[in-house]
Length: 197
Image (cartoon, rainbow, N blue to C red; front, top):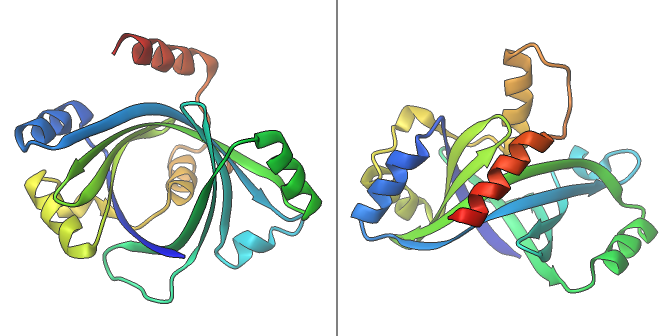
C-alpha cells in the first residue's frame, strides 16, 4: 500500500488562501462535492484496530479506500498506509462488502477544492462544522507549503475529520453523532454555487 502523509489546518479563510495560492502560481485541480460512507463489521472491529474502509462518491466517480495505521509515525503529520481503487459498478460493490460482513456505519460529506503546489496536494475542505485545509505530500514539502501559504503552525492538527467532528460536538454541547452531513438547505446552497463557479 502507498504511504499517505497529511496535516490539517483549522479555521482557515478559504478566500484569502485561494488568493495566496494564485499568487504563488499553484495549479487548480478542481472542486467537487463528496459523499462518503464508512463500512465496518457489526462489532466495529475495523475502527477498533484503526482501519478505515470507505466508499466515496466524488463528481459521479466512486472510489473504495482502505486506510490503516502506518508502521512509521510522525510528530507533526498523520501517516497512513492507503490503498484505493475506482469502482465502476457501485451496487455490486455494496453487495460484495455486505457479503463480507461490512455494512454502512456512518456517513460524512464535504466540498473539496484541490490545488497543487511544491509537490503537495492542497485541499480546501468545507465540512458541516467548518472550513479546513489539508496538505498532503512528504513532510518537508508539507512544511514548505504551509510556510509559503502563511498558515500558522498553531492551527496545525493531526486529527482526522472524524475526531474533529467529535471535538466540535463536545465543544458545542451537541449529542454524539459519528456522521456529519450538510442539511438540505446548506447542500442546496453549495451545489448551486458549484453550478455557477
